Image (tube, rainbow, N blue to C red; front, side, top):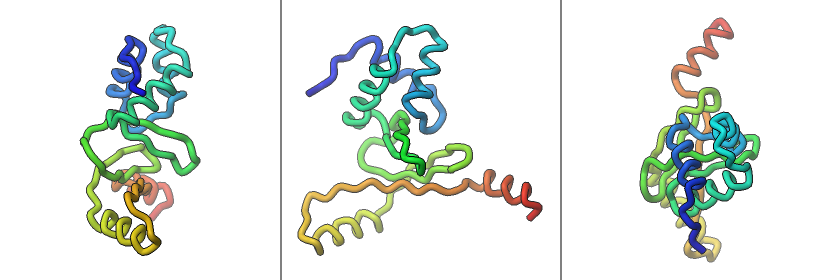
Length: 136
């Protein structure tokens, strides 16, 4: 069922466009609350879920299990490298992963397999900062 375009949904999309990196629904709601939009948390969750379902937003789970969202920059299926420290996100194609997923599914009798691969690590500046904090 398609979601209606409402001013609230449009405003959630604008806030998501303005956010840097992936954000939680709660964080986005806090931003909208500071702007006195009157948009409730449930509306933010519904709008984000709809945007993700339509491919207008990327959605992933953080290592802590929290759902995070970001305005989609690349159309179609892709994967992410995400810095655990600063949230820098790089969209990547992963041909090897695609081949592995299809092959693994087929070996187990599955077809029409879908997958999500997000790689969390430290970007170069964050890794350097962490090493200098340790005195390395």
